[in-house]
Image (cartoon, rainbow, N blue to C red; front, side, top):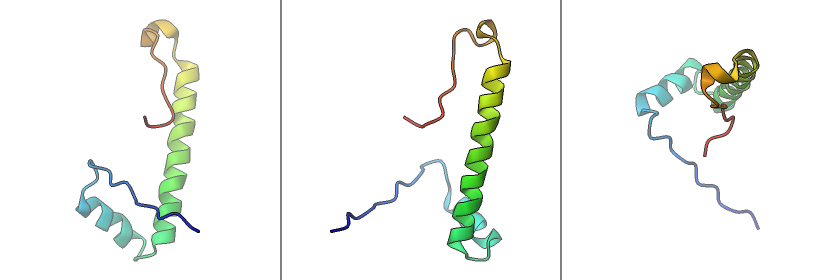
Length: 69
């Protein structure tokens, strides 16, 4: 038995933004998802680099999180 997956809508993403992403990929949803996942990987890598470069004093003890709560 497969569990139904209900997508979680991001309240900050507008319908126009979603339509723009889909239109950019000419309606290919898989390509749109692959691009967004590649962007996510890139941003996580950039966050890791920034975390390694900044001192504890600069961030006053703050550490970035890689996952949403």
